[in-house]
Amino acid sequence: MEFSAQNIASLLKGEVVGDGEVKVSGVSKIEEGKPGTLTFLSNPKYENYIYSTQASIVLVNKDFEPKSVVNATLVKVDDAYQSLAVLLDFYEQNKSGYRKGIENPVSIDPSASLGQNIYVGAFTSIGRNVKIGDDVKIFPQVFIGDHVTIGNHCILYSGVRIYDDSVIGSHCIFHSGAVIGSDGFGFAPQADGIYKKIPQIGNVVIEDHVEIGANTTVDCGTFGSTIIRNGAKIDNLVQIAHNCEIGANTVIAGQTGMAGSTKVGKNCRFAGQVGLAGHLTIGDNVQIGAQSGVSKSIKDNEIVLSSPAVNYKDALKTYTIIRNLPKLREEVIHLQKDVESLKRITSSDSK
Image (cartoon, rainbow, N blue to C red; front, side, top):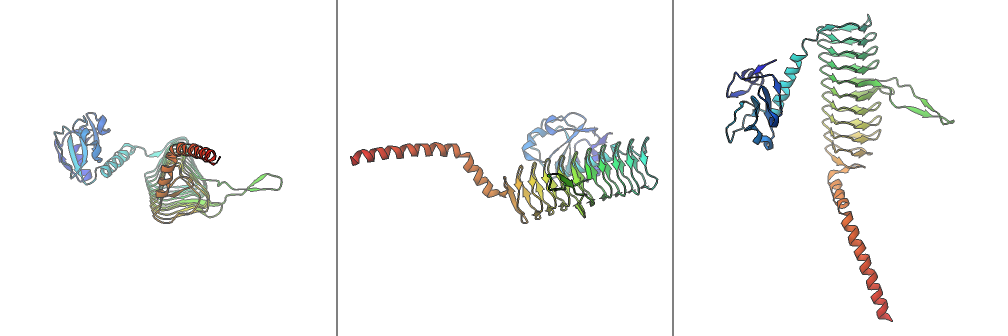
């Protein structure tokens, strides 16, 4: 697909500076721009590349004023980064728009209800009493268990597994390998040392505009629900345990693990490899730094780092002390030698 600068400006409500008829069919980094591609500039530290890039079109903020000649056509918008997201979303929708209808072979229970303009890829299995909304795309080799509800405009990429009774809202995206509704990790130790499995009879509820990354697992509740609220974005390789709740518009980066019954507020941001113990309450607008270990509840608006996680200012002080430990060790050794020398001198004088 090709788009002219004027097409792009019309879509983004922007302004063309340069050749409005120049066309692009791909996207590139500004420092690696090639003819026939579009790029963007939102971070000022990359400005020097705009004067040498070979890209045909560059999205820039409306307040951008070049300091030298720019060969590319500019499309000025309110926010270049957000506009790029809108443009890529439009491109993706048009690219995958041809996927409609039901491929063969598939297994769809007669009791399942499928919405309009749906796509179901080959080797997909859809269970009993499933309800799927309009404009849903289900790629090949997806499993959807019994009594699952899926809203409108969702995308389930190949290899997604959705267990029985899961409830999924509209405009959700699940990437390959995501597992929704797997058993929570519940076992009761017995007198003979054997662990007896506790049946997990709850479900998962995922609200609208949620994105789940590849190979991420969201366990069902032991009883009750594991809940992912509106607009949450969860990266690849994340573990959400049974009966957890993730607040609206919370963002969780890869390799984060969350133990059972932990509640996370809205608008939180977790960096990669964060670990959270069970039965915690994480407030709204909390930020947790990479590789932090959270063992206690956190109040609203806190920023924490380290393991165990503490306020980021205290964590930075601790890092500074640790960094200086080798120097401090040398100083202590020298002080010990000085003390020993003084002792010998004092002992000699007393004689």
